[in-house]
Length: 191
Figure 1 (tube, rainbow, N blue to C red):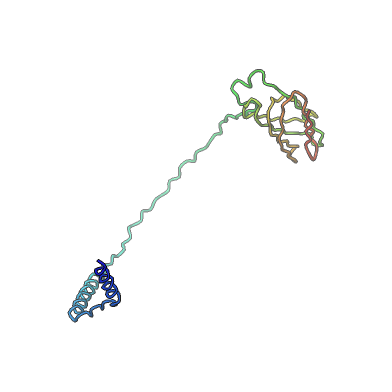
Figure 2 (tube, rainbow, N blue to C red):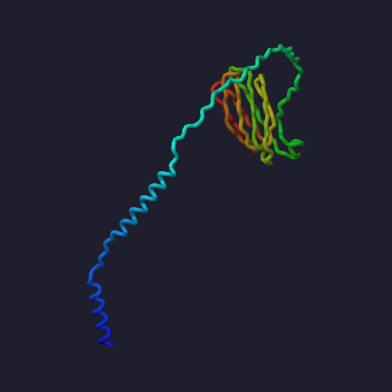
């Protein structure tokens, strides 16, 4: 068995040392076949290419144009009709109003500015989650009072046509919350 293994290893080494086999040189017959096939393919490709053939040109013959005579039509006159004017809605957007027992806080708007006309917009959410709550007031007197439901609100105050102030506030008690409206700022004094 040892002798067989030795001979097998010796033959494997000799086979590994022999080097790569040479590639055969193509014969004249193979070269001629390759040249004939490529020539046939080239001729087929050239035959399949389109050639420029003259196309028949058409001559344009214009159609006769029709002439139209405009007939004046009477112009319609519109008579204005009165349209319905929608009154803006202010208040709670709940069908039956706020439920009974909703807590309300007293709010006082005091105009200490030199401009007498005050436009006030208030919108927000009540503590019970009624949303939105929207009010708009215009007043020219020195003070304006209102009871607002407990909640969180945003306000926009316009002094005449000149100035605008905006911010937010909360009402969560029955005591008076006062807005002092001045020429340059709004001061909110609460309990």
